[in-house]
Length: 305
Image (tube, rainbow, N blue to C red; front, top):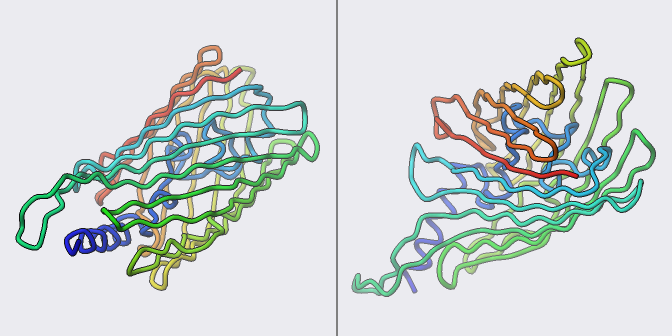
């Protein structure tokens, strides 16, 4: 039991320094397109819309959308950390859009021992969240969204916590200019047996601009700014900038830059791209950094109808 509590505390400390919050499943973006665009997500649609801005996705014309995303984490430091997510969305008429999502943060296994150092069993810690989102299209250019989430953080045997939180989103567009705002992770603390962790409450705003170069070619620029208010020493701002080139709306090349205060995130440059054939899409992002995110990547696969 003492060993379990000690390891649980160790994971909290590691989560704080590596991913800005001990509830790191909420702090780390998992949408590949957003990651390749410098973590900008407020004005662009995604199959992982429930984990970006559902209001943005509600303004698209897709009837059904399902997606899977995989992202290994801090592999430059330690093996065994990874994020997986599954999402599904459905448009019910012109004004209503519903989505569900499941997200899991897997961590390395470790051995539980007794007070004499004897191995009792192997343990697999993980965090997961389940979300249900709803977006309402105010008109053809504006939408609101709300997502209700449940999170469970399991750090060790008899050392876990769970809570509920809400994400609120808005997006509107005027001709080629988009703008969006969000409040994310609005909820109660994660209360572990001997400690508490504040959810990384985030206030964010962003703009996007699309320019058609010709009938088949276009470029898009995105900029997001956010303020994260977490635990006492986990407060600060973050900004992201992304640029995307699209050919026939089927082939995309992307790049971006993300910069954040050291207490709330890790800065990086990003590269990526995507291919869309019919309703099938695949996206890849790769990070360029000289820190814990060196050689980090993310992969998304989705199908739209």
